[in-house]
Image 1 (cartoon, chains in turn red, blue):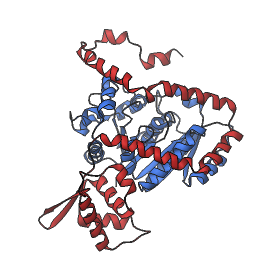
Image 2 (cartoon, chains in turn orange, purple; image 1 turned 180 degrees about the vertical axis):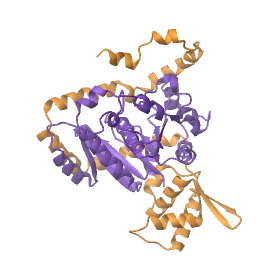
Image 3 (tube, chains in turn cyan, brown; image 1 turned 90 degrees about the vertical axis):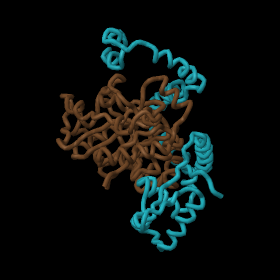
Image 4 (tube, rainbow over the protein chains, first blue to last red; image 1 turned 180 degrees about the horizontal axis):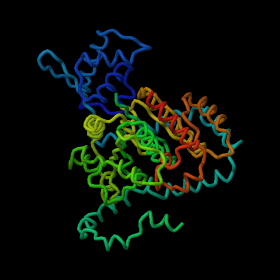
Length: 182
Length: 259
C-alpha cells in the first residue's frame, strides 16, 4: 500500500537491508543507484549481498512509498521520504513504552546493575540523586503541558516589550551573577 | 570523511552537554572543524559552556525549523570566545573552528516548539547541510534526554553514538532501552560513558560490569570531580584542565568515536 513516507519507527522495524539503504539515504539525502550500491557494499562486511537483491529492495521501498525514484538522463536518483509531521511523535513515545516493557522483562538489567549500586554506592550518593530526581520532576523536563501553554500565551506580550537597554539589562540577575555569589 | 556523533542519555542531568562541549574542544585541539548542535530544544543549555548569552544568539535552531532562515545562519563561531578565555590551558589548533548551533532560550519559543512540534525531516536536512556548508570534520549532536522522534533521528543518522549513564538505579533500565534502540537503528559505533561515578567505586570494576551487562564498550568511567563541580559549566573542563585524568579519559573517548 502506498503511504506518505516512513518514520523512525518504520526504520527500526524494517528488514536489515532496507534499513541500510534508508540509513545511507538519510545521510546523503539523495543518491544514484551506483552510490547506494557502494554504500551497501561498504557496510555489508558480515552479510554480502547481490546487486539484484539490492535492486529488489529499492523496488520494495518504492512500493512502500518510502523512496522516490527520479530518472535524469542515464542516472536514476533516489531520495527518501521521511514522514514530516509531529503526529508521529506520540507513536514514537508509545513504541518507547513498549521497549521499556521488553527491557523490564529482562532481569539482567535490574539484577546485575542494581547489585552494583547496593554493594558499592554510599547511601549519601543515593540520597543526593533522589533530590536531583525530584528537582527534575518539578523542573523543566516534565513541566505540564498546560503550564507551557500558559507561558506560550504570554509570549506575545514579551515580544511587545521595548528592546532591552543596557540599563534594563543591568537590573537583571544573570547566571554569572548568581555564580559570583560564591 | 565527516563524522556525525550523537551524545545521548535516557535521563536528564547525566552530563550530556558538558561531555559534548568537552569533545568539541578536544576535536578542535586536534585541528578539526567542529559543529555542535543543541537539539535539546525543550531545555537548551550548551551555549552557556561556550560563554553565549541570550542576546548573543542571532538565529537559533528554532528559527531554522520554522523556516525563518537557512541552517548556516544559525551557526555561531565560538572559537574566538574560547581563545579569548585566558584561563584555558589547552591550545586550540589554528586551523580549527568551533561552530555552535544553539536552540532558543526564549520561553515563548520553547513553548511553541513543545506545542506545535516541528518537521523532523527538516532537522535531518539541517544536519546534512551543516556538514556540507561549513565543511565540518565532526558534527556533535547534543540530544534531548529520553526517546522521541528527533532523538531517534539523531541516533539513526549518526556514525557513532555516546550514551551517558550514571551508576544509579534510575539510569540502568533507560540505558538498556537506549542501547536496544541504537542496535535496532544499526548505529555503526556505540560507546557507553559512565559519568559522575563516586570515587569510592573502582573504575575498572564498574567498567567491566557495565560492559558485560549491556554488551557494549565502555569508553570511560568518569569519577565525580570537585574541579568539574566548581567550574559549574562556566567553561569547558578539558580546556581548563588539559592534564587531568578526566581529560585523558575524554580524549580516549574522542579518539574511539572517530576511529
